[in-house]
Image 1 (cartoon, rainbow, N blue to C red):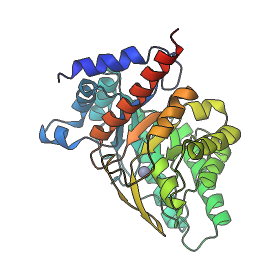
Image 2: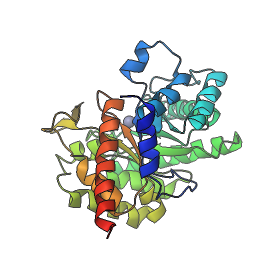
Image 3: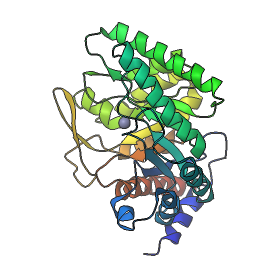
Image 4: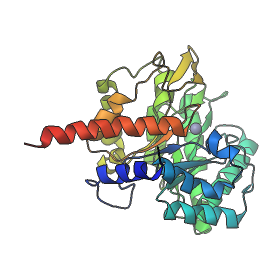
Length: 315
Ligand SMILES: [Zn+2]
C-alpha cells in the first residue's frame, strides 16, 4: 500500500481535535528510528518524512547513551526539528540512562550535567520534552530518595532558566523495576514539586512494577483519575505515554514484547477506548521491539474505535 493515503486517513479522522499549545490530537510514533529506516542509511534528520509516509506523527529521539555534552551537532538537531515541523511530527527526546538523582553527590552533579546536555539538544530541535529515569533508591529510604531527586531537578530547572531554556519540559517516567524511584505516586510528587515538569506515563512499567496491575479499562481509568486529581485536567488530557506489552518477574519489568503476543499485557485497546471516551490527546510512544510497526497498530486500534463511535453518534 502507498504510504501517503495512510497519512490522509489519520488527518481526516482527527478533525474533531482543536490545535492548542499541546499535542493537537492523539499522536503515535516510535522510541528511536525503526530498523527499516536504519537500513536506508539515511541521517536521523530524514526520519520525520519517513514517519509521515507511514502515517505516524510523533518521534522520541534516543539520547540514552549521552554523557555530559550533546552527542549530536547543533545543525543536525536543528535540521531534525525543522523536518519534524514540516512533516507534522511531534518531537521529544529520551534522556541519558546515566542519570541517577538519588546517588551520592558526585553522581547527582554528573546526572545534572547529563540531563542538561539532553535538554540543550532538545531545545535545538524544538522538542517538547526530555523523558528520563529519575534514579535508583540504593541505600536511601524512599522519602529521602524523592527529596534529593526533587532538589536536583529544581537545580536543573534553575540552570536551564539561566541558559534561557524554558520551552522544554522535564518528563520523569514511571519506572518498571521496584529498585527504581518511579512509582506513579513518586512521579506525580516530582511533578507537583518541580516546575516545567510533566509526567511520562509508561503503562508497561506501571503494569510490571505492580505485578500486572492493568487488566481492565477501569484499571487505566483509576490511574488517569489519580493524575487528574493530582496534576489537573490539562495534564491528564495531554499525557506523554510509553507503551509496549511487557513480561515481568517479582522484581518488576523483565523484557518488552510486541503486540502480536497477546499473552503479555497490558492490552492497549482499553486505553484507546478511554482516549475516545474522555477525549484525551496523548502522545503515545511505542517501545515495543518493532517500534513503528506497533505504533501503526495502536493508531489503527484508535481509528477503529473512533469510527465506531462516530457511527453510533450518527442518526
Ligand atoms: Zn524510559
